[in-house]
Amino acid sequence: MSREFIREDYLKVEITFDPVLPAREVAIGWLSDLPFEVFDSTDNGLIVYAPNKFINPNELTQIKTKLQAIASLTWKESIVKTENWNAEWESDYEPVNIEGRAMVRAPFHAAPPSGLDIVIAPHMSFGTGHHDTTWLMIRTLLNLDVKGKKVLDMGCGTGVLAFAAMKLGASFVLAIDIEAGAYENTLTNAALNGCANEDRLSVKCGDATLLKQHHHHDLILANINRNILLKDLKSYDQVLNAGGNIALSGFFTGDVPVLQAAVKQLGWESLEVSESDGWACILCGKTQL
Image 1 (cartoon, helix red, strand yellow):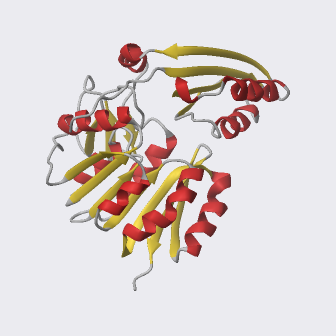
Image 2: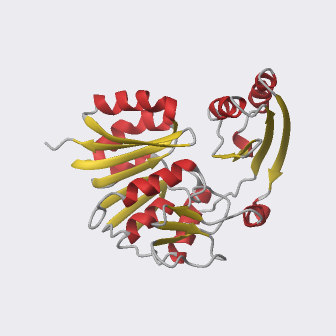
Image 3: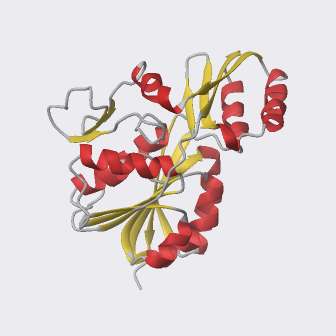
């Protein structure tokens, strides 16, 4: 594919609160309305990342001012250059263990003795398994029968869920992300995982409009955010086979009723809701015709 990709610098915001709660949860809720892609909770606060060019400084300042009315805080902003991204992650990058059944690790970590092994190079994109929503999605995937299924991974990030599905026996996976960096990283990580098989994996850069070009799927994995999910649910419904499943995440537990009401309107059944540290995942089923 002949295309030039622009690698973007990322804004890193480190915040500490006193007291930590409820300020940290309030901050996550407010900052999630901006284009932040990673929310790492710490003992004393929060670290968030976003493509720098997408952040409106005035909106960020307004959120900071509102948070200062809730708790005492320290606020540090810095720019993570693309060329420094590996060092940023490797300085504090631990393998992610999903109940002893799967591990998401960097290439410099040893492979697990058993279970699913997913290797992700920590480049300038997200979905490394460290976020609670990725952990929830992998656990949900592990509990499904994926063998022989056609899978769609929307908002694939670094390809974690796509590779997990392939290693669980999916016959074909379509991975889509709107970020050019995520597209590149998914291709790189596909080779690391032995998944660079064009007969079983297709990686695309774009949004839900790409779905018009592709066939139906038995399983859809969509770990994005509430607003994008609500906007694109009808597009997912059009390419999800009857009797298929869809796992949704990227939203807070307080958003679950809103998502459940939306999927009910499509005739889907909410089969299971799982939670981790304030984040949620909903597994749905599409009624057989």
